[in-house]
Length: 117
Image 1 (spheres, rainbow, N blue to C red):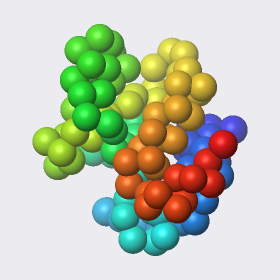
Image 2: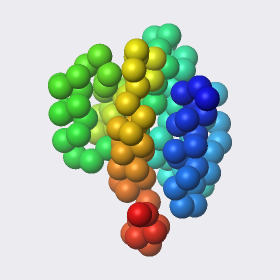
Image 3: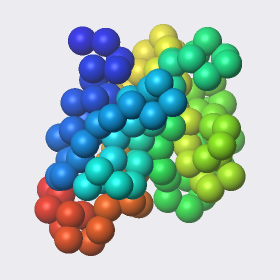
């Protein structure tokens, strides 16, 4: 399974999540309205990554702590979103799952968040 398939599985496992293309890339939405994760494969830098909503302070902490794995994405970085590289030697998929769940919690209504384990 490649990185996109693994990311897709994590996103679509969350309640009332849908996927559709936006700007040529897969994006995952809560109830079809609000994006919480965006795949990024061709954004002017030849890197495979995803962008996700993140709790306050997470972007600064993760990018500052490991800029080889995390970055401030264009367009949404000023809103605190986090960029996560998927083309690094060893992707920590447990950590990616946590980041995806955290992104979902930032966007989803409380009634859906309550359905998470």
